[in-house]
Length: 171
Image 1 (cartoon, helix red, strand yellow):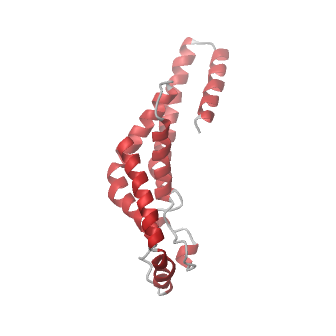
Image 2 (image 1 turned 135 degrees about the vertical axis):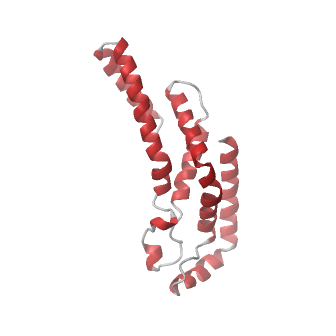
Image 3 (image 1 turned 180 degrees about the horizontal axis):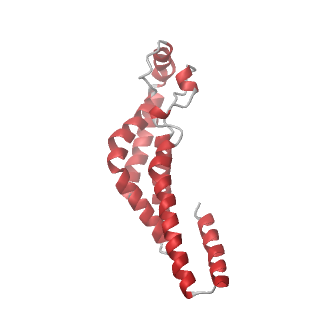
């Protein structure tokens, strides 16, 4: 995760820089392409996000998500983890899912959110959120069964309250 997040941050900075350099293309050429019904063009930053998603993230997504979920479970077990790795990776997944409409065009394609381009957060929902929620459910089902087997319900209720506070702090 260290390597991935450091390369992601460098790529994102380089993509924003290149996007700034090519601002004229973004504002004029891409808009004209869309106005002429050629929808396969997009601004430089969006293209960079789509490229990272298709070339890097797609091949590594299962390893990345497994590693993030493993770190989250370690944190739930009160082990010390690098929380920045978790948040940076999740932010990357979210940002990859937000690539969509170009910033300058007012065409109908760019006014509506188009799931085909991978925006509206569906990458986060599809690849991370579902796994995260299922992993969380399994973790707490196991923990509650184990805890209830050895402790009274009053202790369990205190434990639930503590766990809820822990989860709230980790958001």
